Amino acid sequence: MEVSDDLRRPPVSIEASALTRCRHRVFLDATFPHELAVAPENPGARQRQEAAAAHREAIRQKLFDADPDGWVLIGPDGSAARRAEQTLAACRSGADRIWGAVLPLEPDTGRRGRSEILLRDRVNGGYIPVVVVNHKVTDPGRGATTTGLFEWAPAVDETRKVRSQIRDQMRVAHLHRMLERHGLASPAQVAGAIGYGGDCVLVHDLSTILDDYDTRLADRVEIARGRVRTEPSQIGECRTCPWWDRCRSELTAGRDVSLVAPGQRAEVLRELGVRTIDGLAGWVGEPPEVWPQGPFEDAVVIAKAWLAGAPLVRRYRHVHVHRADIEVDVDMESYQEFGAYLWGTLLNGEAPSEYQPFVTWLPVPTDDEARSFAGFWRWLSDQRRTAERKGKTFAAYCYSRSAEDKWLLSSARRFHGFPGVPAEEEIKAFIGSPQWVDVYQAVTDQFVCPNGKGLKKIAPIAGHRWRDDEAGGEASMSWYRDAVGYDGPPDPTQRARLLEYNEDDVIATKILREWMSERAVQEIPHIDDL
Image (cartoon, rainbow, N blue to C red):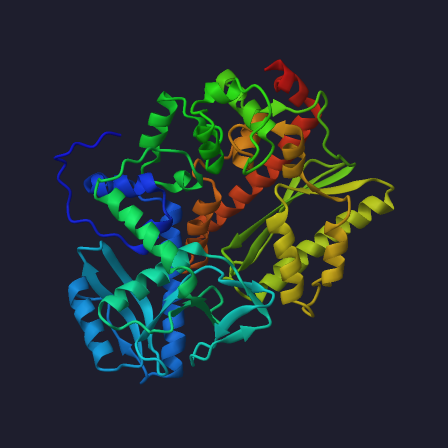
């Protein structure tokens, strides 16, 4: 996209989020702010923002309840400039702990930023920025440096390892540099992040990331000021970007290679002189020495499929998916990391298919999950035993088992000892058996999927349609908040909507595996056919 030399831009300032964002998006955000302001709001982004705000408030309340007189609160009212004045005044008065800090805008560097917490470094002087985020910052393991919520005393944690979050690192580095400008940064060059769970503070060593931060900031500021040219290229971020329709149109017109080989794969291909889908489809010779993701041969097939308009391509002459006399489809619904509130099942056997949900409508996390989970497991075990007693084979199916496996195991651990809840070993035995079948894996093994392998992408090829046009994982999060009454009285219509959505998901899995067994060979071209 060409930018005229006399294009008038408003003063440019960026938050740390721009440092891990698509470079072309940074350009578009800065160049067309009025279009961005009227762009349709992404429901998933809004839901994540609301959940993050609720998490921040829960952490604030927890900290203030523990020490109500130990904090200076910078309230949300008033202009950013006014709140920045209040923040600097609190720092210069020697406040130990500040909540809601806003740092002064820096027109020359382009920085703007805010920190949920500033902690006075009682040993070295200055302030330590601590951010509150609604995602995990550690995993079980060892070696992370953490400190408690109520006292800054960093130490190596033998129970946690760091979960890499570059966006958090860039944000705390951004805040440290802004504090430095006013002589208020701790010389220890450390920062903190309180993540999902809110039971500790992960300590970041800023000395290892400041150089990377400075390079990223300089790059993004130059882009935002129109001094560096950028071009669109498809990456994972595109699916939720307000500019995607514009970029997709431009990429399609140029038959850009990133449409079939997004992300780093497109970068590798461009370095080799392959910039179009046609160029990739016509590849001759050995594959690139370095290829970031998946077999390179699949990328060539996807390019050929794009040119041919084929939604799927068979790898083999025959298509196989494990089948049984008694079949059960399973789909779980969870709300972020708080809990699994719904286990939906579809029984297919001697009688007509029957949908059976096991659900709690108390907001998760709740012990009532134990009841619904136990009910689901009891029912599933009954179907397995019935099949065995009748001398029939049994299989349970899901689509992309990682989420189901996670919540099966964590529910057994969390609710150990509740009536009907199975032992973790019983869950492990089931998910490790041939009776637990991942249809996603069967699709991955036997098809090349030009448009993605999600259930919403693949099941329509087999003829399935969801009744709700808005059906999807992100939309269901908003429905759930209304269904259980997070923001007002519980809405029964949204409960019905979630059950219908879950039922359609299990039906989709059934239709997909039946299609694979019966019609896929006739309807989907083989690789050699391209």
